[in-house]
Length: 289
Ligand code: C2E
Ligand code: MG
Ligand code: MG
Ligand code: MG
Image (cartoon, rainbow, N blue to C red; front, side):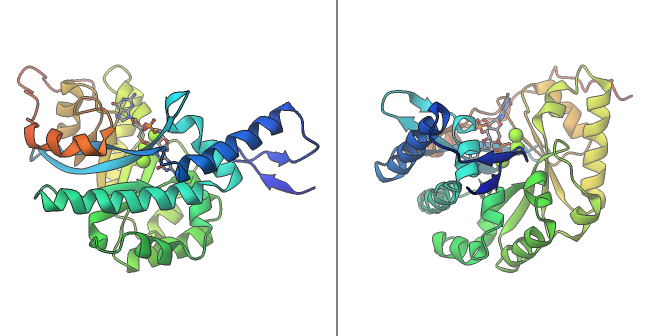
């Protein structure tokens, strides 16, 4: 029997078929089928430049349109896909779909950089840089940003460093996702050729009521800027948060205040009609004064 490292770091064994493994097996075959049957969907969520009040990009987020279960959110199948290695096929699908989306947007004069999420398994693939370049041929690499979580990097930092270095050399932008939630090492962060850091939404969503979260947001922005990185706040839900982030010098925001993730086909129309929110009454919180 083979033992694999599960996503949580615990050992996962493959013993004789019990109910749970039978269910996993059927989920895996369903997932395989999902790609062939065209059931994966690319959703886009905009990112805004907080100072210029302009849309600065969009993040591609996967959904599974299951014939009976409806629209399945990524947290219900991505962890499983990571455990089984099937994530690589999903990543490939997302990269290709993102490239198509970018090309369509560009035709309409609406192109913005698109961010795609990578997982640990992707980073462990020696051929990842070549595969990425291949899948997004026709899109300038600088129009594509690859998001990686701290924990994905820390799984095997040497190897991740190498892969990220190659992706960077090919011209792709790199971003650290969910910053502050994983265990990461500043020593590695310093060595990485990343361009952007995304503050995890748990801090941003709580910063108006919790002084500690506000301090974490403030020092993360400072850290990012000191390292020459651009910084994005996830979980931007209120006009007040926008104003506070602006005051703290945060570069970009992403969250429900702007829009929930939407089907790729709706995004062009959304971009055409978007207006910056009226921040008039949203005075910067004095929580950090
Ligand atoms: P993430 O990469 O950190 O993506 C941001 C998540 O936060 C998205 O959830 C988004 O809908 C949600 N979000 C954005 N703004 C707000 C807000 O203002 N409030 C709240 N409460 N939530 C907000 P989603 O789409 O459910 O994705 C969850 C996670 O699943 C992603 O987190 C990412 O880790 C993973 N994921 C999604 N698509 C992919 C993919 O194509 N590949 C991989 N490897 N992972 C993916
Ligand atoms: Mg992300
Ligand atoms: Mg994130
Ligand atoms: Mg997150």
